[in-house]
Length: 122
Image (tube, rainbow, N blue to C red; front, side, top):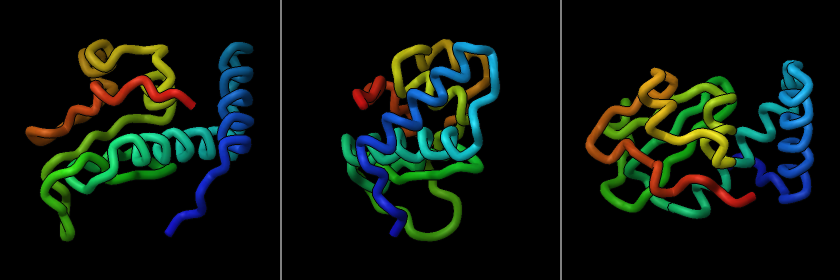
C-alpha cells in the first residue's frame, strides 16, 4: 500500500508546483510527483471504488468509483492524462471538456469520465 501523503506535505508540493508554473519554470520532479499523488489520493478518498482507473504516468494511478471490480489486465474504464493536465483539472484551472477536446485526456470505457468529481478541494 502506498504511503499516505499528509495534507501539509500535499499542500507544500502544490504550492511549489504553482510557484514554478507562475514563474514559467518546470517544477521540481519530487514536488510534481507529490502533488500528483496527493491529488490522486484525494480523488480516491472522494470516490472510493474500483471501476475506473485514473492514470497519471509516471507518477501514479488510482482506482475510483463504486461499481464492478476489475482485477486482471487492462481495466475496461481508464482515464489517462499528463501531470500538468491532471493538476489543472483537479484544481479547477481547466475544464474536462477543454482538456479532452485538446487531446490531453485519453478516456476509454463507458464510465471513464470523472469530470463530475472535479475540481478537488485540497
